[in-house]
Image 1 (tube, rainbow over the protein chains, first blue to last red):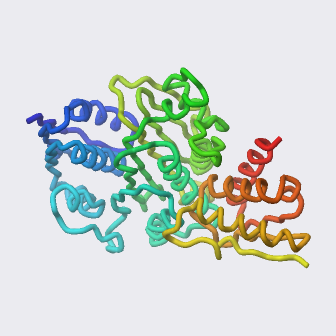
Image 2: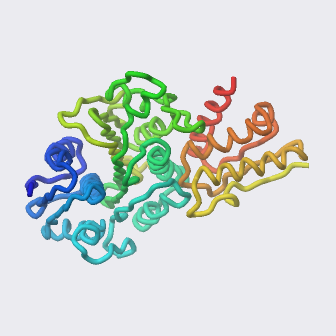
Image 3: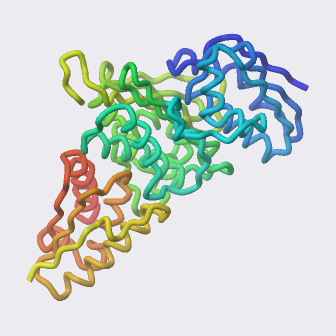
Length: 286
Length: 98
């Protein structure tokens, strides 16, 4: 049995997610029927990005007849609480069901989905509204950003596990962190239908620029991810897209974005975005 | 006579976003045949992507024609955010018909 221990914090910064993806790579490469253990007992921070990567890896493993075991951390208390509120403990270790309405929860639990439906963003909006006022524009943008990512999975990904999402609100900074992961064919494979031979990095650059679509359906106009990018840039936020052999980052500070080749291929697409819906240093909302 | 439709009346929490858009688009097409102007109000509509607007506009364009989409249907938005996302879709749908 392959055991992968994680000692580092897997916070929601791209550098930490990158290290975590490298650590997961040997597990992802295992053949059908393999036994493996992801030991997070010494890990001291997990956020929505890591939670979605872990849960999607386990769901994919179960579909492939693998026998995954995940050891979750029990300290510090805030991380123990996140493991409960996110549903990691329930879905991976048969713990209690997550209670998103718990007064201490700042987390929208992990959710597996196959379709974009009308109320997908409602749990995030409810969570944010428990902590801060949310104006109409911010509420619409938050829901639209999530809906764009979910619709892309429904339309293009062909993911055997559908998609997995998780979100967290940090009341101290007024920041919403949203993570959505699928195990589908990836953005480059989708875009290659209309852009033959397109590489992974180029594909990410094109979809973030907008008006480039793989046209899985006639309704696809290539606006989804470029809308998400525009929304995060206008909300002092950032966006990371990992798909196949490449990753892209863009933010309000780096609107042009930066693009990277990945040392190990990710079998699907992971989208992590942060929006700031609180007031800035001058008391202004986004 | 002007007919007013509320987008929210055609959405359900667990219904697919694109099915909701198609249902609204079909209703617009039915009404526009008997009324010179149809107003579609998006008050309170949240959690929808560009695909929602793409499907709505494509349904009207494909059934009632581009000119109807351009001039016989008025879209009323309840926030700048809604307007921004929707109008980007409208431009793309009109451009793809050209």
